[in-house]
Image (cartoon, rainbow, N blue to C red; front, side, top):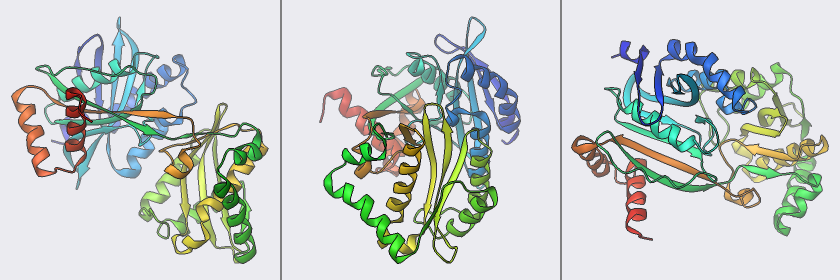
Length: 367
């Protein structure tokens, strides 16, 4: 079973030639091809498709990387970055890709992203141990995909609104002027209260040792905590990514209260990770940290901030409208139909069941 995960398979689905690279060693061998595509297609500044970043995330979450390189006229034309879910080191047959905001999945020319993802899904489902693909990509400018079921593959599509891009046009004051009055007051109120009651100090440029210490202190004390080992690997991966930055807030005793990191690129600042001390929820450290961060970036001429993975609805309403295109791909024919029905019955509120239900409502014109 494990040796199969380190093979390279080839097929020619749809309009693309296709190579599937599975496992760390094979994927590492395809990294130069993927990087060339990022450069030629003008997406080199998108760190979510940077191969170093992709492989680092796979190591952090202990997933098996899987990359599909698509060819036209025997030349690389697109790539799709996926990963295999495992339990106790054993492949589950479920392949996933893309973040909650639909980033880090498809590298392709405009207008070719849906076709590239469909072709990649078809090739991956041809692997004997794969039965389900769940992938998400930003799809606001993509045509609605209406791939019918064939003997090879069954696709169910779903569109979800996402909020990631926040404008800082007009500087920090311009950003505040676009907020509702209560939200605008909160940005001032919580920071002033934290400065008065906790003596918070904002550190805009963390040294590597300070960033590591902040993550060490906060990884188990934040609301969405991760294990110590995962947090250390994730911080190290972000630190080695081009454009890296990290900042934080600490109290007068030197205790770290909040940490925020990501990378800066010519088109804006990307926030990848934020940790806040959960025991101080009343202090609204998330708002405090965000106030310092946005004011700092605006003061340095940044006009666009992207929150990788999306934002809460409260702040998301002030972001540029966007959407995420979700794909559920399973085997076609009777075998695939039986598998979908079985999963739906076993997990009626699971992601697969909900996507199938949504797709059925769209196809029948339901609400």
